[in-house]
Length: 429
Ligand code: PMP
Image (cartoon, protein in one colour):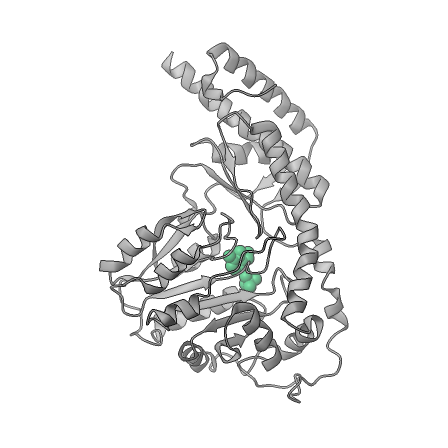
């Protein structure tokens, strides 16, 4: 039967609905599930796609005759920089290929800005420093900033990228706002990709801080879930054309292309920013793991090799994302208590439940053996002011587990909403 909005039910109908959901929930608990949708990790099946790496590299010299087993080469292997330059629309000289983690490169960049100052500014340490972050967003951006005492000013994430008008208004007059973080493509967790218009405005907007920085975290640049592939905006050229060449620093990695724990990460920026990064980084490293870099060069062969590899991931991931949508729609369509994203890329579905019930949904799911990311995890300090958002990560479990877990989550969403509404009925009766 088509479902009615829960708020339209009479108290008696609502009591009946709640009793039905309570029974369904008790049956769910009785099944003794043990499922985990907490973190956006690739599944074993996805990791297997890259096992060719384990037989590589063949030989130990790269195309320039460099013995990759030895020290040196702080910029990373030329051939790997060329592959990423093509993928990220920059020149090879604008790319540094590093270790396994782009998060580490973001952290190093931030710390160098604090201690030594960015390429075009004084050290941020000792100054009042704040960052703009779209919400919901990536928890590790928030926790990294918080760990250095950098305050976070939030702006809403929208379907075509962050609320740029709000960002423009914030940065225009406040010199303490030194930077912003953004996941431009298939954002974590909102799934949105920034539009050309919004990217161009970020590139050109006047900022009170002369050394304002955009941390352009392109973690999901190639992670399409459909054949229609969103292209990332070329923020480096846009900023350069707007007279702000040193504003953006782009980050990406193969963590969700090859191995999450043993891929390669890259930083891309203006050649001045690259020189700045290396000037400080030379004191931290004599060179990256070039054996792993050569392994990746040989495994992919070219930028097209990376794109082709991503199709195999899509074939594994797309059915899981479809299963999330089917399970949520089956139980929740028409009830007027939840909406969720249908991302065309990335690793997450962002689920908004009835205000004030997200923590309850997560607790109910936990008691039924379904581990969800804590409510509020996509907000700074874990605090979702509306207690509304839940980040779902369907990549890791096998398809049947995603189906079972999401059916269970849907039951928890409707039970929590029904309980809340029933409580309200009683309270206002
Ligand atoms: N940025 C975003 C937006 C992410 O979602 C993740 C992984 N969850 C990372 C960065 C981490 O990247 P890496 O593995 O390269 O450190």
